[in-house]
Length: 584
Image (cartoon, rainbow, N blue to C red):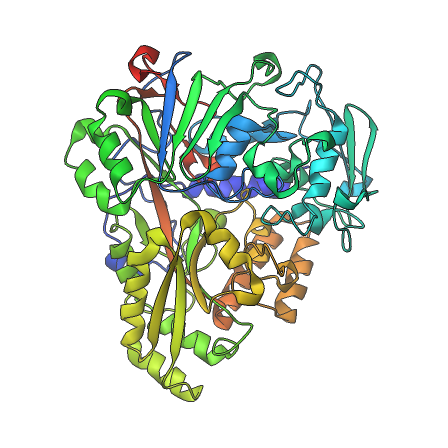
């Protein structure tokens, strides 16, 4: 039932890379021969797929250091990393989830709340899940199928923006549905009893079981509804519950004593407490974990190590051995707002393709140890490991070519703004400098990371240009290009993905055609061809394919990158070597 997804995963396995030190330079610029980009390279930290620190033991306090608050912990609104990893591994369970295992095994889905990964019928238009026995919330009340239905319905609510759009895309009758807060329920989700839930779809979706791993498919009982305030006090179905939450400062999790390990084959729940310390500045988190003094030995960080800190790690073998290094499978791009001038003009967008210096982006992100230059929207992990370069644009750009295109467009004195998350200011300044060589004046605006998603989601006030990355929810082209460039996914508020506000009928028609294909190879090839066509229309400039440097303290064990969460630390498995040293 998952042939297309499994084939894509096999391609991702073939393309997996460890965190390499090989130079990007000429090899990347010339690598258009169709050869696999999965060259074996030496990782500066632990090899990809390795587990750092051995097997943890129960107990102690795991501390998480971060520069930001969570965008949304509400499972109906949670669709960014690392919040999605944090929520689904610690606070709530979903119908199915990604296997907790290092390396490519982490792409596999396994039952979570459900007894299996779903049973399709009616040619893939109907999917049925049965909940396990003995599932309970933090207060000991049973988890019911109606609670999963309720949270899926909540994801349609205009006030609860930001979450995955799969339910709205796939469920029959969802086009004009506005959620359950006004008392209306969606007939295409049926709960004939407390353990059974049935989803009726608009069309066959062979990958719907993977969709059910998204936070949208976690349970929320209607009695716990708090609207937008649910972010502050998620009602736990997972191994931990919220003890205290002071936004922007600290979140403390303690054990949910009603979570039963016997019903959960994925989460190990090693620590007794998890304390998230927020609002750290600059490289404070990196420096504390590098030193690993006292309680900092029992510390991890979110989302990942700052690029400029890598130079502090690589010369020290004992520290380098604590670095988890995983390829993300994500693409960072410069998104151009096509809904208004100047980027409603295809020539102006094409000029940006030629103006941007992507080599400078590599430098700004920490160098070739942390990233590769992107030449397409789809990363190599989605294209069978093959890195193509259809446009043949020099990695350093071509300012004169860009100037000529802007002249053709009648925009020789272009002034634009670029809005970025605070942590991307260095990268924004590199773009500012490279565009200036083409005669484009750029004003950089920075936004706090915790507010960045919501800022971009306000379509009416969306910036002219923005930096962002996209990671597939699972290894299939259907989770990539449609979310970035299908005009039908654009929302007035809570817009997530199509930051270019790109509306192109030919593109949408081709997406519909590909989604309906049943031949796996044909579909995969069609996504790649569509990728090439989109590059010519230039709604965004592909910049980087990142590698994710994740550093842990000396007392941390069970640390590895989760393939299902784009290389983030798998929080289902992390714990401590010696709980007494955590001073918890």
